[in-house]
Image (cartoon, rainbow, N blue to C red; front, side):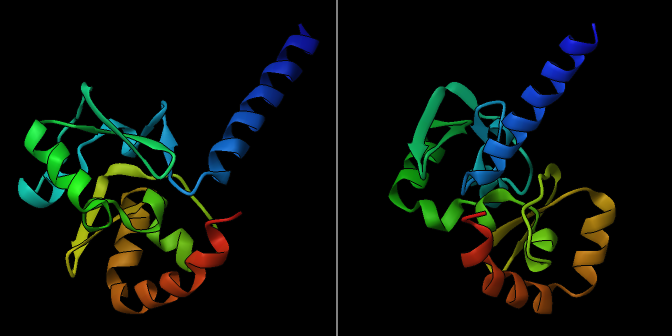
Length: 145
């Protein structure tokens, strides 16, 4: 029993460590937990994508709610993909990768950002301009961690 628990713990650690090495935050095999990145801009809400409407970009599988959204993303993925690979914007500013919750999304200056949770989003929102500058500076080093 103890050996099984140790193996399980090591497996979880290994999976989370490999996920952190990705330039894009991937959960359940999908970028931004399977939500349509274009919908945040066009519908101003989180919309779950369909497995049948997927596109591979930046070593990640992106899902879309419509063919129109998928084609828009294919034409300009940098326009719609979240900043810092979908990792927490505040965490990136602090120099590390952190997972995110989809309901913490924000669009600032036509760029999509996510945060770890709603409390972190509150902190990030209070100083967005400075934290974005800091995260932009940190991202080249953080993305390869």
